[in-house]
Structure formats: structure tokens, C-alpha cells
Length: 393
Image 1 (cartoon, rainbow, N blue to C red):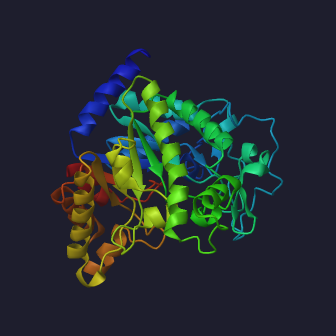
Image 2: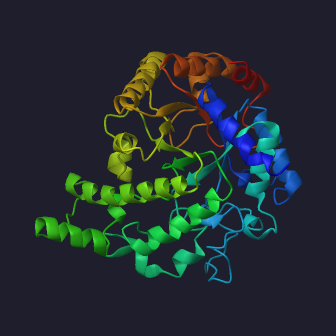
Image 3: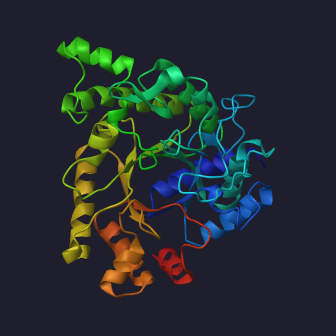
């Protein structure tokens, strides 16, 4: 039976790519108060909960910060444990410090992958970009052992715990982690740029980038990190990393679809490029990614449905202009980084949440979208009426 799982996954990948796909992100860390998430049975119950939304594709989060959600050889202890009290975070909120998915004795992401195959659901990885949750917690043991590679602001001020992609050693470390995820045989990988740990080109004042600036321009690196010439230098390093991810995926001999987040669609500036040094259009043209998932939009509340439709149509035009790529639009059960979820649309339109979801689904379809994504599905975000609306669409 186990030999059939990869074959079933391949069939599901083809079927999903031809239909209006409904993708749900899962982070098992959101469920300990509801299920025993460090067990096989708890993992299956998480899937029970998420599939109530009508999801046809599951993206399981690989880590929080750089703490894996699976037993990672690359991050295996004994390494230096972060010298912090993990029971608290900066806002003095309690965290579930006893949950250690990386040493619970079972690869629960593999359990999820196998269970998705049995249930006829496409399985993938929700690949976060952050290496620490801002400067505070969920720090990587590998990063703590390699402070010489930490990101820095101008003047050498380090960003505690995060390492720069400009260093070969860092990319090689991250590629080894990616190899571990590819061993789970996902049919899809979503690169989440929203969860960046606060990273932006302002934290790339490291030796390789500064040396390249001096070589190109003969001056010291710019004080204004928004200088487009500086962004272009940083973008070359991010693009190289994503190209290497694609190469690693192709080495498996299997089709692995790679999607990338688009943040803050509808704003006047390209947030992905200016704040993440990522040119998603170029990545599509060069075949490095296979599609994009709009993570959040900012509509004009004076014309929320019309402006949302125009934002969607603009993104679809941008994707189609590259000559390739699929595009997905968000169904979010809450506001995410100050960007509205469907409850906000419902409140402003004075309609039910289920009706707001139906309208957003119609906008995604009518714009030419290939499906929707559901921002991390927590234990009880989606009401039965909302789940029914998504399932029946």
C-alpha cells in the first residue's frame, strides 16, 4: 500500500491543477489546546478539522522561525539551545514551549502526507521565509552557531539570529533543509514571504553585498536601503536561492509545483520587490516558480467589491503576461497584518460571512484565478456556513 502513495499523489497533482483548487495552510502549532498534536492521532484530527473547509490541497507548515515541525537531521541536537526563556515572548504572552514537534519521535509531516494521500487530498509544504520570529524566539540552533553570517543593518548592527542569503554557507544550509522536505514527496511548495521574521533589504548590509556595491559604484553602500540599485543587488541573491530551490525540486524527478506569495496587492508600489527584494514576474518568466498566491489585498472601501475585482484582474494580467503560471486568491478568516479577511468584507457590506465568502469566491473565479488559498486554518476559524459555501462552490 505504501508504494501506491507517491503514485496517488501524482494523480492528485494533475487533477488539482485542472480544477478550481482550494488550498488550506496548516500549522500544527495552532492546535495543541484542542488536540494532542505531537501524536499520529492528533495529526489526523487536525486534518479532520481542516477538511471541513472544503480544502482540496493541504500545505503543512515546515517550521516556526527555524524550529522544524519534523525531526530534522540538519537541525538535530545536540546543538546550542537558544539562551532564552522560551515560555515567554516580548508581549508577555504565554507560548506552548512544551510542544517540540522536532523531537516527538515521529515525523508528523510524513503522517500528514500519507493521510492526505489516503483521503484523496493533494499534499504540499508551507515554506516560511522567517528564520526567527522577529528578534526574539524560535531561533535556529544552526543560526546561533554561525553568527558570522547574521544579517546586519547599515553600520554592522546585527539582526539577531537571522542569516543572510548572500553567504554560500547559508544557502547550502537552507538547501539541505529543503532536501529534507522534498523527501516527503510534496506535489506543491508554497513560499510564504509574509512570514519573513521582519526581514527586508535594510538588513542585507553584509560583506558580500557591500563588496558588490563598492565594485559596481566605487562608493560606500547607500544610507537609504530603498535605493533601487541596492535592492537590485539584494534581489540577485534572493533569485539565486529560489533558482536553486527549483533545481533541487527538479532533481527529484517528480513534478513539484512552486507557488510564491504576493503581499499587499493593490498598493501603489510593488511590496514584494521593495520590501522582500523578490521580482515574482521575473521568477515566473524564468520558470523558477509556477504560480503566485495573493496573500492579502487592500481594497478601496468606498468600492470594496469593484476595487477587489480590479486588483484580482490586474494580478491575473501580470501573471498571464509572463506566459506561464497559475494564480490564487485569498479567503481569510481574520485580518492578516492589517489586511482584511472576509469578516471585514461582511461587516462593511452588512451581509453574512458566508455570503461574503461566496462573493470573494466568485471574484476569484471571474478574474480567471485557478483557485483560492485559506490563510492558516486554526482550530475553529471557519463556521459551518462558511465551510458549506466553500465546499459547494
